[in-house]
Every structure is written in C-alpha cells, then in structure tokens.
Amino acid sequence: MKYLTSVLLILISSFSFASDIQVQNKISRVQGKFGGKVGIYTIDRNDWKNFKYNENFQFPICSVYKFLVVGAILKESMTNPDLLDKKIKIHEGDIIGYTPVTSKNINKSLSVKDLSKAAILSDNTAANLLINELGGLKKLNEFIISLNDKDTIITANEPNINNINLHDNFNKTSPKSIARDINKIAFSDDVLDKRHQKLFRKWLKENDTGKNRIAYSLPEGWQIGDKTGTCEYGSTNDVAILWPKGKKAIIMSILYTQADKNAKPKDEIIQATSKIVLDYITSQEYE
Image (cartoon, rainbow, N blue to C red; front, side, top):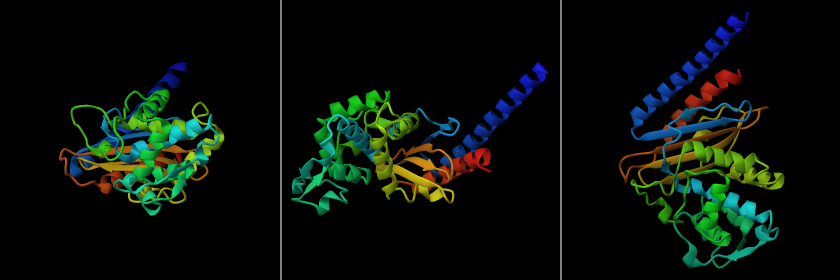
C-alpha cells in the first residue's frame, strides 16, 4: 500500500511537471514567432504554486518601477502620518514626457496621495517628485532591499531610467523578483499595514494603462490591478494582481524585450502568453 501511494505521488508530480513543460513549450513557440525574449512568473495565493519561464532573466524595468516608489511612500507614511496629505507644487519645469495628471496641474499643488495614484497611472513627473520626497534613489533602493529583492537596482529617475545599457543590470528586474515585490507590498503585514495595503491595491485596480496587456486575456468575472512599463528595445511589461471570482489573488509578471534598441513595443506577446498561462491555471484549478 505504501509502495502504491509512492508511485501515485510520483505520477501526479510527473503529470504536473509535464504540464508545466508543455505550457513552457507553447510560450517558447510564441516567443519564436514574435522574436525577442519573454519572462513570466506567477504566484498563486490559493495554493502557492508558481509558473516560471525565464523567471531569473534581467529585463528593463521601464515604468514598472513606479509601483516600488509608491510602496516606499506608503511605507514611509506609516511612521509619518501627515505625509500622504502633504502638498507639493507642480512647476512647468517638472513636466517630463508622459504626464497625464501633473501636466494638467502646473502651478497648482497636489498631495503626495494624489501623486502616488498618478505614479501608478505612469505619470513621470509624479514619480520624480515622490522620489525626491523619499529622499532620493538611495532611499528607494533601501526599500527594495527590505523586500529581499537583490535583482532590482534603480540608478536613475525619469526620463533616464528608460535608457537601457545592455552591459549591466541597473534599472532592470527579473519576473520572479518583481512578482514577489508586488505580492509583498499588496499583501504582507511585514511591509504595509492593512490600511495601506488596501490603498495600494485600490490604485492598481484603478490603473487603465494595461487594458491591452494581461487584462486583454482576463477570464470573465475576474478583476485586475496592474502596473505597466514600456521603454527602449521594445520592452513591454505588465505586473499584475488578478482576482479570480471567489478565489484568492494570483500574481502575474510578464516582461518582454527585444534586440533592436528602436524596436516597437508588442502588446500582442503579453496578450498571447498571458492567455496561455491563464488557460493553464484555470484548467488546473478552476474548472
């Protein structure tokens, strides 16, 4: 009987392993079709299973880093309760690139809370002002290290963070590390208290920049909160928290980059690979 149980356990493990390989092979074919390199990591908070593909490769982080800035601000506000209400004036010289919120508020003041929400919406100026409020990039990196993330080192703010150097790992991250980071900020009591976790998740849910990425393949009835990023080498990123109907959340990071510095971003590879992974997850657990 003990022998039979052992054999069954081996068969079950082998089936699960083979299924992972089959899905990885599908993703490999998609990667071959689009060119470039894609990396994926998931954390299923229902059973703590992970799906992995190039999960340790270092990809350009692009604007995904902005959720780390917001996480650091929320962490700081736990010991400085007036921080989120602090007003910061927006000057015309502060406006850099994509600024959907701050560009409409030149010579006006926005609260740190408003700037945090704007940063999740990928407002460049909001991110820069928040980094200044933290005390600079050193403080941001201290927060990242506190998450036990040794892969992600931010050495520039906007717009220079988007200038990618292929010969170092600065301003880059891995699918595994960045998925763990968003999971910890959103759900770990060791990082934020419940009130600040809830605020962080709310801002992610209100973000609308990712409708053509992971959200495009989302099963009906699921909710999503995410942070996207796009920069040089056609780098196309999405890091998301998914809420299946009636289940605990699933974390999914998909990062993509290409060989040509001037390559265009490709939402389609995020759509295709997320659908493959989501189909696999739902067939395994949510039939």
